[in-house]
Image 1 (cartoon, protein in one colour):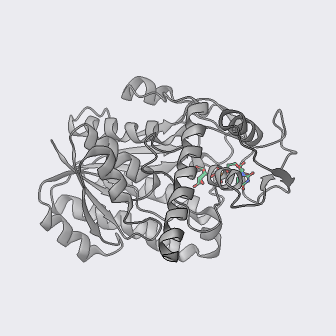
Image 2 (image 1 turned 30 degrees about the horizontal axis):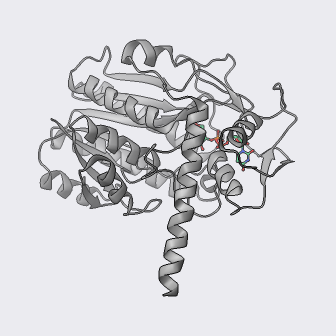
Length: 350
Ligand code: UFG
């Protein structure tokens, strides 16, 4: 089966996607600079699938290194491009880092594609491009709103770069996937989310608080115009999300696309509040998540959830996992991490 390049393949969504690709027989080459991931993720992937993917420690902003990588692995047929900086707050502090990383990486790959005869490209985008939509659930036709952060702006600009590049040269075929909020971990608990330092995102903060690593969760704002006053998001299981990438790649390889660039929302279609998540997490896992209300977080959208009809009908993809099972998988993964930490500490003492 085809050889696929996965940039950012040791990251959270990337690693789950590599597993799903290998499970159906694709050959995977991972390129990652490990700036926000760990080489041990390859062990987890190998444990689940029995296959250790090829790995190259390369920063995608390094054009020459990428060029050499394409020479080393001839016959790559498609690229799934995850590698990017993704912390909203950090992007406000370090905008140039975000513009350099996220834009240069994309431009390098698009430039190298015709040189190495790679036609197919899947891009990780985000529902952040919709800002606060005027209508919910949000469809792919909703207007793009001014970005609220340099991170969000990079996703918008990257989408435009892909569209412009494809208009300029019919060689390119691309699928842009707009993710809602990915959560959970692989059911084997061999891979999951590994946030660096204090988590920005809700779920790792919830699991770390339940594990006693954080004192309490701050719920940012309880005065929003929502039933319980807290923000609403569309939380999507990371394995479900990963499976959509396999379908997208296959669609490109089969040349089934109706347009040179197709865009799909990847969400469940259901919105849940911060308190829904906390309460459900406590109930299904039988653990407490101490929490209190704090002021609103700057830049937060009040409510957003997907209309996933296009992905459901055109891709034939649908989110399968329940939020209950997904929150269980997140807790199992956090417990696994705690066990690994204990083992490391015990080894260090010996
Ligand atoms: N939240 C808290 N406390 C926390 C962390 C989060 O109350 O400690 C709340 C937020 O205020 C928000 C919700 O939980 O209401 C979800 O927050 P996340 O940070 O997990 O997710 P966001 O929706 O803010 O952002 C995510 C990704 C971004 C992406 C965005 C839109 O992290 O990369 O979705 O796609 F841009």
